[in-house]
Length: 226
Image (cartoon, rainbow, N blue to C red; front, side, top):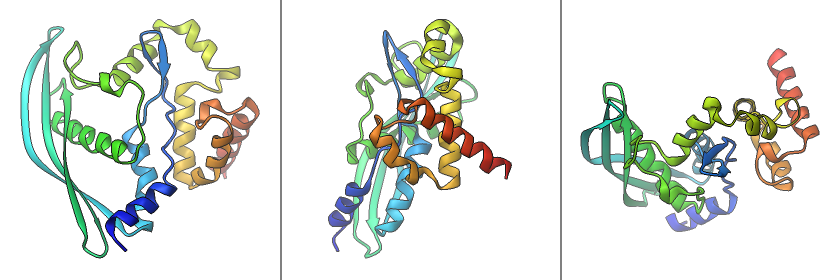
């Protein structure tokens, strides 16, 4: 079987992980896909179809910027992303990424590599993110996507009344609780069992009816206490 046919089969089975982290961009609230959730979703499908990924950093540029009296280390990288199969067929594509670190700068390159790989895969898997074209580091907080900057602002409490209302009954849709629930479902291997339910109700955990969310919270709590 050709490499392309294997990839097409994977595409037919791939469902993007839920975007469960509420963020704010102006007056618009939207979630984004986290890298660890994308990796957890993609890994078993790659193995199932005899595919593998390899990443090689080809170019690195690091500069410093003064942002609000803080030094930010901004890294730009070019990476070669190889997709191969068990029959030794390989396809290589180059993609770029950008990341920043306000500490010693050691994390900037890793963030840039993660950014490059994540966004390349989202494109290849036809799984987009809202407002992703507005991501970047050219403003007050380099290296952070608009989603990441917005969630920090949102979680800081500047919209506490709206946030409380959006969290639903008894805080069922609190972003931290939703993230913890998703992590528990992925860890226990139950995520695939929940997918059909998500499809029926909008595609994400925070769009489920209250009774379904309560049931999932309860079942996860019982499993952890067993």
